[in-house]
Structures are given as C-alpha cells and as structure tokens.
Image 1 (spheres, rainbow, N blue to C red):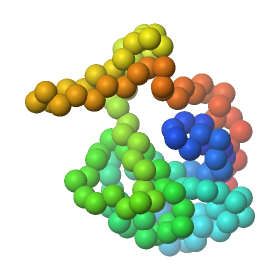
Image 2: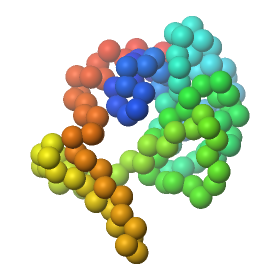
Image 3: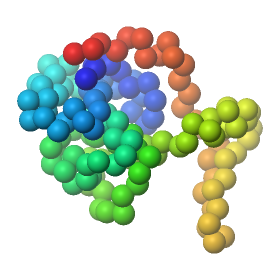
Amino acid sequence: MKYGLEVEGVHKGQPMIFCSATEILSQDNVVSILKNATQYKCSGIYIEDENGVHSYEFLSSLFAGYLVTVDTKVVRPEKVPANIIRMLRMPDELFALVDSLTSNDMIKFEHNRTVKVFAVRDTISTQPSDFEKDITL
C-alpha cells in the first residue's frame, strides 16, 4: 500500500491510496487503507485488480465516499456504481506501437462498424520519475 499523488488518468494530481486487489482481502488492510485515506486527506483509492478479482459493487461499498479507480485487464459486464472508474490496462505488447505515434495521430477501435477513436494528443503520459514521490505505508 502506498500514498501519493495520482500521476496517470483523469484524477492526475489528486491524493490517493494505491493498493492491490490482494491487499483488500484482509479486513485489517481495509481498515488501514481507510485510516490512511483519512489521514492523508485522499480523494480516492486506486486498486490494481489486473484479473478482475473483485466486483464493482463490492469495491464501491467497501470504499463508499471515495472515488475508486480499478486498474484492470478485465471489464466485467455488470453495473458500474458512480464512484467506480475503470482503467482498462492494455497488453504490454501494444505499448511500443502506441508510443511510436505522434500527437497528431489517433488510435481506433472498431467492431461491426461501431468506432471509438482516441487522439494521441489527449493521452496522459507519465515517466518512471513521476512515481518516485509515493510513500510506502
């Protein structure tokens, strides 16, 4: 578990508690996360749940009153409570390809003529040094 300012995503710059999906399996850890979130005046909890271990409803109720970012490779076909934000983690193999694009380029997803396009200029980029100020709790 760590405390720091969010450096990626829509909550960039906001104080957060960062933890893994396995850390919240323990009631003692959940109490510690909530205590630290209060102490550090955090606006949210960031959970790395790569395999989609926890349901959105469970995370929402566990951390009611906080924005919860779920960093995952699995998007569940279930209702997403208002305080849950999903960050879909793309396969590592795509990073070099996306990283080679310029700010004038776009990324396109298409299925049955339904299209989603993301402008590279709108991406939020971070560097390894951006994570160095996190405090291990």
